[in-house]
Structure formats: C-alpha cells, structure tokens
Length: 202
Ligand code: ATP
Image (tube, rainbow, N blue to C red; front, top):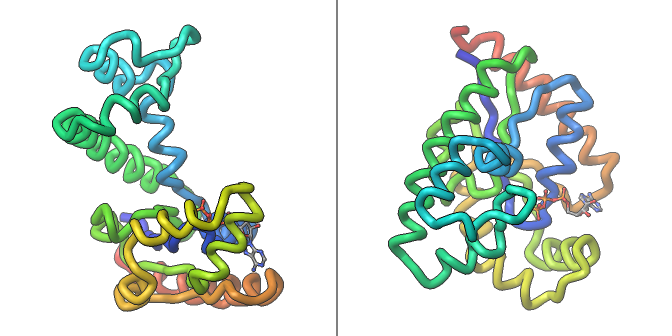
C-alpha cells in the first residue's frame, strides 16, 4: 500500500498553500474537501440517497445538492445529522482511499482540515501539521475571505486546539514566515518523505 502523509492545520493556517508546494514537487494530492463534494455530485449514489431520505426539495432546479437547505435541515435535527454523517463518512473515507491507491507518486499527501477531529489520522502513515498563531489565522482568513474576526475566532474555538494538534503531529511546518521559507521547509520534508516511503513496505 501507499505511504500517506495526512496534512492538517486550523482555518487559514496554510494547508492549501503547503499542499500546492508539495504538488510542485510532483506529489499527488487527495483533498478531503474535494472528495466530500464528489460523493454528493449530481448523479452520484450519495446524492440519490440524500434525495430518497430528505425529498426532492433538497436539490436545486439544476439537480445539484442545495447545501444551504441541507445545512438548515440537519442544523436543528440531531437524528438527521447522524443519518447524514453515517451515509457520507464511509463514502468519503472509501473514495479517499481509492484515490490514494490510484496515485502514482512515491507517496501521497492527504489534505484533511479535521484530520484529528474526525479520526482520519488512522488512515495515514504520518501526520503533518501546518502551524501558525491564532492571531495570524484570524488576520490571514479575514484578508482572504472578507469575513469578520469574531466569526473566524468562533471557528478556531470549534476546532481541535493548537496545542492538541502540535502534540499529535509527527511533523510540524511553521507557516508564520515568508512563502520562500515555507517552500524550503516543504522541500526538506519532501526529501524526508521520499526516504520514508522508500523504506515503507509497498
Ligand atoms: P482553510 O482551512 O480556511 O481553507 P488553509 O489552511 O487551506 O485555509 P490557505 O488558504 O492556504 O489556508 O492560506 C490562508 C491564507 O493565507 C491565504 O490567503 C494564503 O494565500 C495566505 N498565506 C498562506 N501562507 C502565507 C504566508 N506564509 N505568508 C502570507 N500569507 C500566507
């Protein structure tokens, strides 16, 4: 089986930025956010199951999942939320593993925002945490998304804490400096992961 590095970090920490630097080194990426959209894409088995359960009012006229409606529907209904998670979590997990097996690079970077929160660290050989201070998480996210600081702070508080993530990380990448520094950190980790994947029984 493939050697898999799970890449995580809080909101605005720089997961996408780091993942793209690994991709520049030729590493294949599996992105949990993309997979989560794929399993409910138009015509998918996931979307069909959701329609059977919640009714056709859960899709737009174009036949796509109405995410706002689904969010509303499960917001105040714990049973509906559980049903949805029990449907989607195994599908997402299976699709991520299948993309890993189809990858052709020496190892794979799996980008998972809630890696520890959702127990997906069990699927990976090694964890890499992108680390920045909460102050930087707020300023970079506010700048990127044009949202207010309180909103970002609430999301930070809903995620696994900085110290918890750092304690559980096999590797840590500091993203508080310049992108050029980050690129050097990625290149060093890439060499390390090539070594580790070479020793890993394929
Ligand atoms: P989310 O979980 O919210 O999707 P993320 O962890 O994927 O975020 P990115 O989108 O990669 O984070 O980075 C957050 C913002 O910070 C982006 O606008 C990105 O361009 C910027 N950024 C990332 N790294 C740096 C850096 N070293 N210096 C300055 N800006 C940075």
